[in-house]
Image (tube, rainbow, N blue to C red):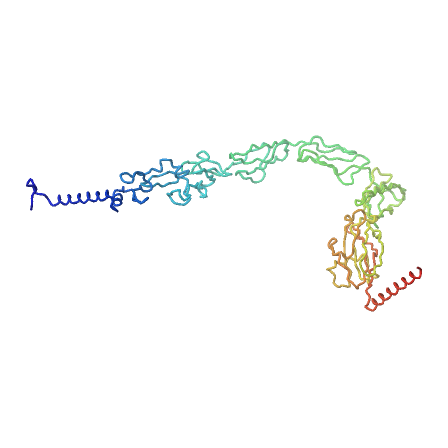
Length: 556
């Protein structure tokens, strides 16, 4: 092997290194001289490991990758996106974490990313939303009520429960507080009072009080309630011993027997000489209200009238307690009124004499009237009062303008109110009958139905029913067959070719008694003509016009 100038021996590797350097110098020289391709190869070979070689404006340059900054060749340093703050980069309720060339975001505890991932980058609109922990129904344990808060939650006790072992609100993971049902225990006592029936000691439960026998509630509410504090409201009932005081005085009577004023005490009375109590013994009782009961009977002069009765609606019969064949004078005071006729008043005052032990009299009374009859014997100090009611009779006949109608149309009918002389008027009915039934129809027939309830077209029907109170200004106009409902009755059109009788019926009703009166309003007769009759009528009309024209011309 050859040696160098100094006689040293060169290794083959040194020659290879020299060759490589020479090639590199030649390459650089070619690049400087402008030979194509030399510059591109050199630049891309010198790019930083975190840079990318890109061509711009005909040249290749090194550019740092996304997330790095620098010259692209000798320096590409990681950008720390999180240095601007987590709220700026990631949004509210987040923490920002830098990575080589990037970053990622994590939601704080109590929040979750809207993309449901643990980490996110907010370039797609993802943000951190509050987690509603209260969706877990048992989170606050038994009796607890969960209230969601931003990023967390708080527990309160529900109505009817109270916090124990800690304050409120509380957190079940960190606090020992628990909710227990409110129990107020046994209701407090009331002097001379007691709890009525059962009670509930939970929140809102009520205990009802009453005073013991012999005591009266003089003030205060009778109810105590279990409060949210777990204690009963203080009872306000005040009971006081009952004392009715002195028994009442009764005219023509004297007090006998027990005079105590305690509850349950009974005061007894006897009538004085010459007086009696027809109803029985007279007593008054000291009640639980602290007052004497009302006296139901009285002491009256001994009555000479007994067993009074009414017959034949207006006649009276009674028994005389006096000796037979002794003449007695009887005084009558009669007062009559009608609830349906406020202005009506009948008053009669007269006397009669009789020596019979069973006198009787028939009174001149009006029908449909309530009477107060006072009957007193001259030998008696007090009258006997009875009440009687006379039955109603048929109302006055309807006032109608009678029509005979041939063909159509029908006239409008005027309904006039009648006076309530014999009893209250309850309603007016318009009846439609076949003309052939007019002579056999009974006004008090109650079997007539509506138009749709007829069993046969030949039967009559009720076309309208109008309450007396619905007739304004004492009159009302009605058109037969107007297809309207009056009450529950349909006013159907009359059939062409049929003959009808229209009646107006008035109903009076009182004390379960019903009376009627009827009047024929109209007779509707058939006026249809045959074809030959129509021709005859037409020719007759032409002849009449011709004659009329002739006479007119002659006159001229």
